[in-house]
Each structure stands twice: as structure tokens, then as C-alpha cells.
Image (cartoon, rainbow, N blue to C red; front, side, top):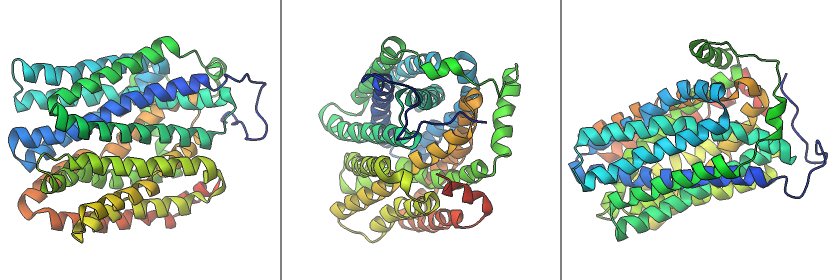
Length: 422
């Protein structure tokens, strides 16, 4: 049985006017690290294109950026549960900052062979995923302490993430033009350092974490805890369905953001800086969507919102490019896609937080990360290979078809009825 969440009308305890301060600190720290990540997502594919001149190599780099999310999600979730959410977040941020910093330092001094770049991208992703899991696992605790209803807390968290992506995209566009791709990665390392400082020094302990339920006691061994997370996901129908849906949509999204959009952006602006505008418009729309969900999401039917969100968020940008619309229209399509996507993460996160007990929260979130990112390396590799052979247009058509099929899946099957319970 999970701990009941606070309602909007009746807080659990009497709270001071500063009760929400810890949640704000957590979300700001998380947002800062995501700003750096957004810069990296834009800069690294463009740097690989510049370094190699190969779309296929860009796809390989995208795979090396996403494979560690699978590994780090599964094993990292267990480590976070074992060593604590806060400690794991600090260690992960510091380690990720070091690996990101190594890319420009080595490239500007001893040189950066393609193989070494792939290794550093892999290590950065391997360490980053557990850190993100740890921060996300802390959100329900601080929301509970502040008396904030969970759907609103997850929506605000998503809004912070979207804002960070928006700022990172805008910053990347400016940095690419002003200081170049490699120097932009120094910004990433700095944001990781500040995030670690905020969580390690400024963030107080959550009161809710002192009252962890003993209903679910995890197995002693790390391997058993890993299997425990998988078992919980496997026996929960709604979670299984979420993983199946998101693994397909993430596969296409990885192909889009790591290969298809960078290739298209190079056709619009020679330096690829248009990719920053694409990312910025999507993030800006998603920020607005998350804020709207924070205000109205708890009143809306979740299944209808999920289907509508995916139908707009996925196919619309690809259709705009296929129609050879002007760049301004493509940016408008990205804005609309982001607006629709803004409700998806907080909607799914609120559903999961309501189901998963705190004692196994991080390992279950880690297992989910592994599941939903499983297709991302394949998406990046397939996009790089197929664009190299067939060109951009056929791949975009295939992406639209598969996305539409996946988006309507929640209309079928009894497991999705759980989304109606808000």
C-alpha cells in the first residue's frame, strides 16, 4: 500500500511559508544539469558531423550516447536505492561533469580521435542516468513535505526540465556561433558542478524520507534488487504498457533529435545552428504544455490526453519537413509538438509515483529507464544508416507511420484503463 498523497484542499501538516523551498532547490539543481545536457545534445551531433562528415558516424555517436542510459538506468536505480537518493545525485553530477569536461580539454590539447570521443560520450551517459533517477525519486518526498499535490509537483518538475532544455537550446545556438562547438561543452561541466553543490550543500533532508514505509523491504544483494525492480514492472499491467509504448516513441525520437533534425538543420544553416532553434521551439512549447498540465491536468482524462499528446508531438514536425514548409513553419510545428508533449512526462510520472512504493522507487524508475530507452540506440543507428542509403524523405515517412500506430495503442487494451484513475 502506498502512502496517500496530500490533496489540494487539506495539507497533511501545518507548514511554514518556506515549506516549498527544498523542492525549489531540488528542481533548480536538476534544471541546471539539464541545461548542460541540452547543450551537449545539440553540440555533440554537430561536432561529429564536422569531425567526420558522415551521417552514419553521427548515428553511431547517438547510439553511444543512448546505450549507457539502458545500463545506467537498470544498475543505477539499484545503486540509488542502496546508497540514498541525495548522495547518488551528487556523485553522479560530479562524475558526469568530469567526463564532459574531458571532451573539450583533450580535443584542444592532445587531440580527439573518434573512438575516444565515443568512449567519453558513453561514460557521460552512463553516469548521468542514475543522477537523473535520484533527483526524480526525491520529487515525491519534497512535494509531500510541502503539501503539494503530486500531479502538480510532477508538472512543475517537467516544466523545469522543459525550461532547462529551452535555455540550453538557446544557449547552444549562441555558443555555437560565438565560441564554437567544443568550448560550449565547458558550460555543461559548470552546470553539473553547480547542481552537485546545490544538492550536496544547500538541499535539506526530506522529512518524508524519515518515515519510509517498511511494507516493501528490498532483497539484500544488488542482483536481487535489480531483479526485484524488473519483477515489479513485469507484474504491473499499466507499467508494462507504458514501457511498450514509450520504447517505440523514444526510438523514433532518438532518430529525430540525434540524426534527422541535425541533418535537416545542416540544409537550412551550414553550421547547423538551426538545430538550436528547433530544440528551443520544442522545449518552449513543452514548457507551456507542462504549465497547463500543472493547472488543469488533474481534471482531465489521462488516456485521451496521452493519445492526443503523442499524435501531435511525434508526427507533426516530420510532416512539416516532408511538406517542405519554410523553416519558420517547421519551427511552428515544433512549437505545437512541444505543447502537446508537455503533458506526457508529468502525466506518466504522476501515474507511476502513485503506484510504486518508495522503498523500491529508484530501482523501479531505473528499470523503466532501461525499458523505455532500449530502442534509442537502435533508432539512432537505423536513422544514420537509412538516411545515408535512402535519403531523408523515406525515413521521415516511416517515422510518421510508426509513430501514429504507437500513439493510438492506449485506445486498446484493459491495462490502459488505469490512466482514467486520477
